Every structure is written in structure tokens, then in C-alpha cells.
Length: 558
Ligand code: ADP
Image (cartoon, rainbow, N blue to C red):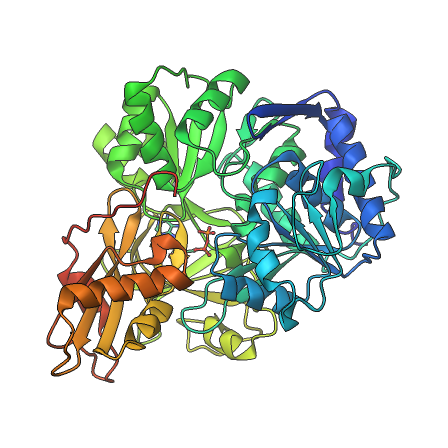
């Protein structure tokens, strides 16, 4: 006898039944919207009815280009519970990436925040958008737009029944989807089945992961288009916790105010957000004493941040490491009893590591000769993971699947199935099983939690007549964790001056890519070091420039 399917709808049902009066708060512009799980459940049902009326059927894909607010949260349950699939799209991506991923996923309907519609307007007539039948703008009016057909969200759901007979979808039915940056080539799609999200959520609720309960006030702050917002919306609902959605691009003042006014106990985000918040708190009065713990991850978390939040604000910083392929978090730097009882420096040293594997997942660290490395805190190998919330393939990408998944890594490779994900992260493991990330074996750069493709930047630079070779590596940066640093070999006898060339290259990159992609610095060199196989030796470059400070003129809100 087996139990029934592991379905997301159980979280929604329980919250509406057991916590009907618990609040869901959402910042919308200057106002704050507030309702409870009872009203939320009714609107989710209205949304599902509206989707069905618009022709969306189980198995169809529905995309969203939205920030964290109550309407986007409604799609998190409304779309998958009716059997369809929510494909969250990062509106910050370059236009060419959005074009590729909407076309690849063949989304049938797109939800979009009003101020993110521009990228869709530019692409709506492209071949890639042929599948898109309907645009729904998040709000209660439709702004001036060329999107067609288009309707505002409130009109879309208005008049529909506030109940829905949720179907018995199979747990292997994809419920979510998110694209991750490819090292080279196009972004790769990761599908999340009902079961993956269900099991990820249950792990999230365990005390050894986030231990979310109905006593918590949870602020889902990680953008909901990044790895399911690290699953906070599902877990908080499953727990019946009060939720606080901060709206589009919240600044430090907004975050501090929401924490104080709503009594937030738990939130999560990339280190840059916490660095900015601390800076803000230095010069502004705000009471963040309700905050008990913060999950910081997506990029290395500086020890100074962990220390300051602990010492000055009594906030526990839990470093987490995760990937889109893992639904979200895979390791977290909790302290087991013996380390929790150790001296303060030992505790900080452990917290600064990427963490220990969460319950339910397994990992191996494998060296280049395909053997597992010892847990000696020194020997480096590639991190492999597997488990119920880890994907075993990319959507329609057999060539990437062959590279990124393995049957039995570290133990001669043979085995059944390709369920081990090769993460591309190079790590060491200490005696207690804490993983430390030392490098990445791919060359993408992660600035403030957002990817930058070094390959695309290199192509853009090498397209200039005066450039003979160009490469870009990520160098560490206090606020953004990593920033791009460019290297150029000029064509012999090029007539342009280096400064003028620098300016032209920056201008070209700025024209085609988001502004934080532009390298803050471009160095002119006689040659770029190469590996034995003739590729640019980026690892060597990263090593030589490990202590190099780049100055960026990016503004905090970018
Ligand atoms: P996310 O949306 O969660 O950032 P991505 O799939 O875009 O997920 O990025 C995953 C990659 O980010 C990891 O493979 C790793 O290189 C990096 N990363 C994630 N968390 C950390 C961390 N705590 N410290 C260092 N790097 C991290």
C-alpha cells in the first residue's frame, strides 16, 4: 500500500483551514496590502478558475516576470495546484535570454509587473513568443502598452468562483520551472515536480534547515524568480506563518521598516542586502529586534557580516549554499551541539563555511582522478549532490545532461541512473562535514547574487576591430562578492588609444546588457595566460588578481 501523492495543494489547504486569520502583508508601491490565508485561498481559487477560463490546462506552462508581492504569491499556488506549471523568469536578464527562455519553455500566458513590461514589449512580435496567448499585468489597471491581448490581474480574476476542485495531479507533474545560466550557450531550464517542491518544503521545515513554524513572521525576500525564492513562500504557507512580501526592488529603508512594523523573525537574501542594511542602520533609527535569524547565501558570506549581526543585533546568520538545480538550498551552516558549545571563534569559523548538507540530500566531493576526497579541509574536489529535490536533467538539453549529471561519481562512474548533479563548485570538506567553496570550475561571474556571463562579455569585446583577445574574470568585491575584471590584448598597430578603446567597449556592453554587466576595469596586457589545452587560464588569472580591488560606480539600488 502506498500513500497518496506528495502535492503542494496540501500546504494551501492546511493554511486556509488552520490559519484563516493569519496575515499576508504585501508592499505595493507606497501602500501596504493586507489580507489573511482565508482570503488568500479564495483568491488563489479565483485565479485557477480564471486560468482555466483563459484556456490554461493541466500541463501547460505559465510564466511570470514579477517581484515579491501577494499577486505573485497567488500564482505560486494557483498555477501548480490546477495542474499547470509556473515558470518564474528573472526580469533582470538580458533581452536575448528572456527571448530564449520564453521560446524554449513555450509559455502560454505571462504575468508581468507593470514596470517590467518593456522587455516583453520588445519581444512580443518575435518568433520565440508565438506560444504566448495572453499577457496579465500585475495590478488593477493596464498601463500604456503594446502587449496584446492584455488584461490587468484584478480584472482577470474578478467574478470567478472563490473555490476550486483541485485535481489529483501526479506528483511527477512539473509544478515549477526556472532557468539557470549556462557557462556557455543558452540558459538551461530546470523543472520542479510537485514531489520535488513538496519534499524540499518538508526539509525546509526541519530545525536543521530553517525550522519555520507558525510562530514565525517570514519575509520572502529572495526574488521569487530566483530558485523559487529559495522556497520561502511554500514553506511559510505549509507552516501557517505570517508572511511579509517586500514588493519590487526593496531598499534598506523599506526592509528595516517592514521588519519593525510587521515583527519579521526570519528572512533570507544575498550578502549584499545585509551589507546595505547594516550600513543603513548605522545612520538611521530602526528597531529590528524581532529578527531572530537570517539566511544568507547565493554568494560567499563575509565573516564580518555574520559577526556584526550577531554581536550588535543578536541575529543569527545562517549561511546557505544552493543552486537552481536543487530547488534551492543544499547546505546550511548550522552548529551541531559540540560546535555550538565551542569557543566563539570556532563558531564564527564554521558559520563562515557554506555549511553541512541538509537532511534528505547526499553529497560526494570528487577529485580530477575520479576518487572521493578525504574530509581534511584541504583537498579540493568537485561537489556532487543527489536527493529528492535535486533535478536529474535539464529541459530539452541532452548535451548538457551528459556533462552535468553522473551515475556514480568517485566510484568508477558506473551505476544506475544519472542522478548525481555535478555542481561545478570546487570545495573542501572538513572533519565535521562542513563544505567550503573555494572556486568554480566554470567561468561565470556572480555579482550581488546575479549571474554575468563572461563568455558573452568576451564575445562582445572581441567583436571590436582593435581587440585581438579578450577575457573576463570575476574578482572578489566586498559589497557585490564578485565583479567582472576585463583583460584585453590589442591588435598590433591598432590606431586607437587604450582609454578610448576602454570607453568604446564599455559603451558596447552597456548597449546590449544590464548595466552591472559592464566590467568596472579593463586591463591591457601583452598576452592572456593559457592552460595546457590552449584555453584562457581563468583560474590562474583569478589567483593572480585575488587581492585586486576594483572600484564600481554601481549605485546601491542597482
Ligand atoms: P541561486 O538562485 O540560489 O543563487 P544559482 O543556480 O543561480 O542559484 O547559483 C548557484 C551557484 O551560486 C552555486 O553553484 C555557487 O557557485 C553559488 N553560490 C550559492 N550559494 C553560495 C554561497 N553561500 N557561497 C558561495 N557561492 C554560492
